[in-house]
Image 1 (cartoon, protein in one colour):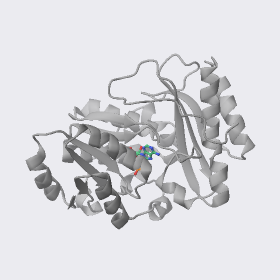
Image 2: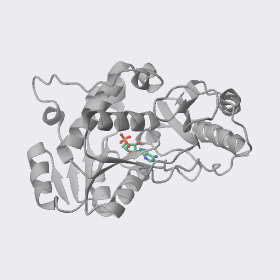
Image 3: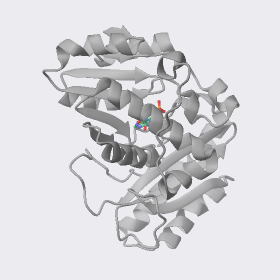
Length: 300
Ligand code: AMP
């Protein structure tokens, strides 16, 4: 496995491999099985898998969150090697943001101003869009793999790829969960044992709504109420809980388009995100598999 830390090293590692499909998996490191499920999906379709590891400072709107973000480069390299990654790109902040850096990719409109954009502030998705653009342009892969876990980020990435004409196909991989249903996240290591139990209300809430949809419920307010009930019972007050269309993140009244139920809640010291696809009315070819989440183990 090649470990590149500069754009020049990355380019020379990829130059001899460009005659066969290249896939890229962008991450912020502290790798877990969720990230590795992206690598596995990438491996299946590409001759060369590039994993990027970069804790992107510009998408953090709170310094304390950036400081507390887990970093584990040596472990990450071992996991990446075992998973069959060919090239790791782990640049420094100075490499990605050279002195005098002055260019931001900023997506206008509600997609970046609502939900995560509202809670974390405008700068969050500007930071995401800028770094993802830079990474996609640096690798120029055939395919790039992102997790459904960060549904709004997926919508942002799809938009920037379309708008900027970046010739990379975006592939979305279903959310990988622990056996108890909790969505895997680098932040989970900061949950206390008691908070980890409380956090299970998130997948329980999503599963309850998904079951209601399977039973015929189409009304967004009713679905929100079903999910809210589970969160209330665990004493969690969500930052948001909403049924939205998966492309533009506009709130829906009914499940008449591709819809996702999105939730974010602070559990102890950790902010957790989760979502479930409720109504994949049309399944685009670049979505591998967007099954609704199964009821987690132990849910009623
Ligand atoms: P992060 O390192 O948190 O920025 O995540 C890097 C990529 O892994 C993003 O595309 C995430 O959506 C994806 N990812 C993170 N957690 C999961 C998960 N539990 N299941 C699937 N993908 C995930």
